[in-house]
Image 1 (tube, rainbow, N blue to C red):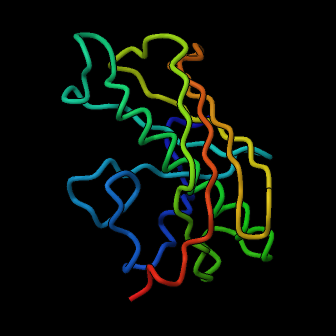
Image 2 (cartoon, helix red, strand yellow):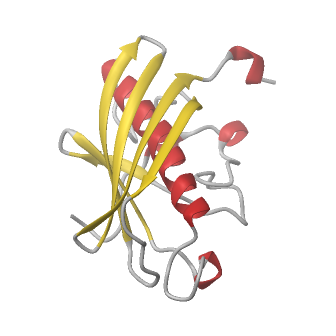
Length: 159
């Protein structure tokens, strides 16, 4: 896998919805998580910064939870966008999702200073609800498993 994401779904989100602290490209202070297809799975690669430390040498679990959260909603957007006949970068605005449920299981301490790779497996539950199972690796070591249930963003979120 590449060390960076080349064609991220977040790049196609409208400016109105590109402000998420985790994945919003317009949030100057955010993480800028970016999610793309990796075969039948999805991938997000992110290198935590020194300020994302829990204890020296290890990543703060909240940052990892944020990674899984945004990876899950981005993966659901990729899946529904493809189901609707579109791909990243084709000029069509992708659907936006919000998190209905987030579960995180920390398997091993996650080391600082290496890129983290979140790999997602997507399952449609309902036309407006998707489940994404995610595994987060540091190098080749599985550190965290997570699950996101994502729902299409309600129209009440629109301006």
